[in-house]
Each structure stands twice: as C-alpha cells, then as structure tokens.
Image 1 (cartoon, rainbow, N blue to C red):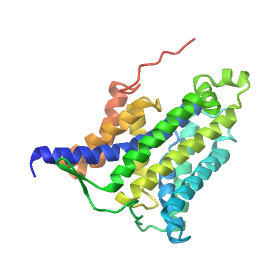
Image 2: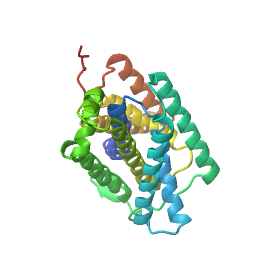
Image 3: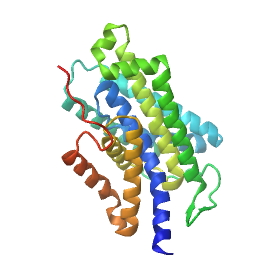
Image 4: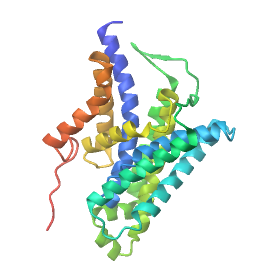
Length: 294
C-alpha cells in the first residue's frame, strides 16, 4: 500500500474516532457551562452505555435497537442519580472539592461495574454487518458509518434543543449567569439536573456505538473520558462546533501518529496536545478568550 493510501486510511479511521471524542467532549462542555463543574465521571457514563447494552442484549435477550434505547435510558438515569447524590447536597463547594468528588464518583462507578460485569472484555455485535466498504483508497466498516451518522444526529439535535426549546434557552441562561437566571424564575437546580441527564445520554451513546469496534469493559471509560476532555479543552469548553472540531482534530492526529510513528504513542498524543493547549492557548484553539465582566 502506498503512503498516500495509508494516510487516507488513517484519516478515515481518525475521523471516526474523533467523532466519538467530540460526542464525549460535548458532554463535558454541557455540564461545565451549566455548573462550572468538570465532571471527571463522564468517562464512566460512556462505559455504562456499552455495559448496559451488553446486559440488555445477553441477559435480557432483547433485540439490538431496544437494547440500545434502554441502555441510553439506564445511563441517563445513572447520570441523574449521580447529580442527586453527589452534587445536589453540596452547599457552596470549592472547585477542588467538586473535582475530588467527581473523581471519587468515577472510581466508585468503575468499581461497581467491575463487581457486576467482571474484568473481562466483552464484544457487542455491529449494527449492520462487518463487511468493509471501499471509499477511494481507504476501506471503512459499516459501524464507522453508524458512528458518523449517529454522532451527527446527536450534535444537530443538541444544537436545536439549546437554540429553540424553552428548557434549552433556560439552560443557556444559567450558563451565562446563574444568579440572574434564578432571579427571573428559572429553576437553576433543575437545569443542572437536566445538564447531567443530557451529558449522560450523549456519553452513553458514544460508548454504545464505539463498542462493536473496540469492545467494552469496566475500565474503558478512563481513556475515553480523558480524550473527550481533551477534545472539550481544544474546543474551549464551548459545547458547539469548537468541541466537534477539537474531537476530530484529536482523532486524526492520534491516528496519524499511531500509523506513521508508533502505535505505542497513540494514547500519549492526546496528553501531549492537552498540555500544549493548556500552556499555549488555555482558552482553547476554537474559542475566543473571554474577559471577566465587573
């Protein structure tokens, strides 16, 4: 295979992986914009999406579409429960306390998943076969097309929700100024709960659609969560186009680095990019620096 063909293959794979990172990154950004909390348990919600779908497929013997829908619903419920038990009871917590609590929550969820499903790696069937398709010089699996399509639908639905629905506008108001939103009658606590629910549903969808390619286990959320966080940082925690571009950029650079340099550096690339962004442009590559209003 020629170098140009290899690069084309790496680009296709990188864009598919980047779409997953973008979906996870949007989940980070939604919670941050509504609460100013970095939810480091987001990766575990991604993991729960894959593990719940496995449970509904194997234990309940449900068809794949029903298993996917129930897995998203169950993970959304887990996200709501997480907010109720860990974030809601806190009174004026410090940012450090919130970071510690979300990290502790992620460890707890991971431990429970290990006890329930064990340490084995599990496979989920592809949505529509596994025969590769040719796109120019590259080949692509049907599951990659599902990843592109479902990610695009989720991002567009998320955009429409925040732009045109009453609840979405209320959540945007809370993101802009929580105190002012409360003064005009918006239930800020309910908006925070909604942010965790939406974030959990997006994370679970990412975990489900990537599982047929990478398989799933109790600890897959660690790296997926960190890379989704990196995508969100690249996008400036905007939750919009910036995060999508950040995820795609990260996926492409990771794929090119693994293919052209060494697969051993695949995971390190995300952390190198994250450190460079934090040092050089901490507000993100795709967002303008925000000034504090006094």
